[in-house]
Image 1 (cartoon, one colour):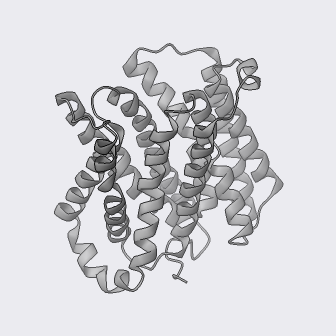
Image 2: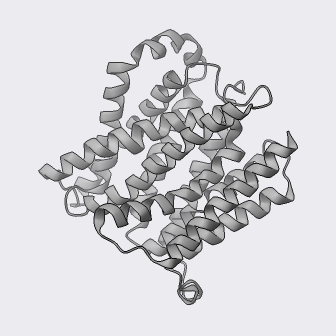
Length: 310
């Protein structure tokens, strides 16, 4: 078993908490951007080619700017490379590939609701696999944030929720969320190395898993080479959700752990909606404000319960 490198070794100070919150807010903002990039990419580039190119770009950035930490820590990483490469394959490439495939057989409404289940899977995994303690208020906080996510994704019309029917794509989304939750939990069992070195190995695993995908897409007759705007989207996806978000997520987990970090994923649909309003011209309704208040309130409640436990 890998040593716990990203697990807090001592009680977390107020400044450390604030720094972790900043990291995780940037993470979820970048993932919220990714949802909008995905909408813009329709007709500009095929999805599996996007997955592969984003990791080619990310690896390029890591090797150009941060190869020294990777080279320095390689002797330690080499001892655990199979599990770390697998983490990159499952938590980064498999999640995104399943996400895009699921979009073909389920609605965006279902996908938004199911993506909000990641914190629940993280919490359940932390309790049953890592024997992490849990308080009733933490559970209540997650329930409140889940209600906010549901309100946001059904557009404030709860009758639409009752009409949902689960399809093959819904099952794929659930599997994708479980994989990312597992990746989040496994971060606590990583070797004590620089987070950038760790992420570089994750990204290499993600690239290894992503490279065959465009060839499969081509064999199915669905490959679309990027348009000029498609290349712009590849660059944006590489910098924000693939590079910055992943690095900051690792840093946030290293401070407060996956159980507390996971609940911030409920902000992703909110950020996605705000970005859509500001940059894609979509309207902001009362239910958006209600959902935002519930999500932020739920995160605050869960954080208050955890901090008073320490």
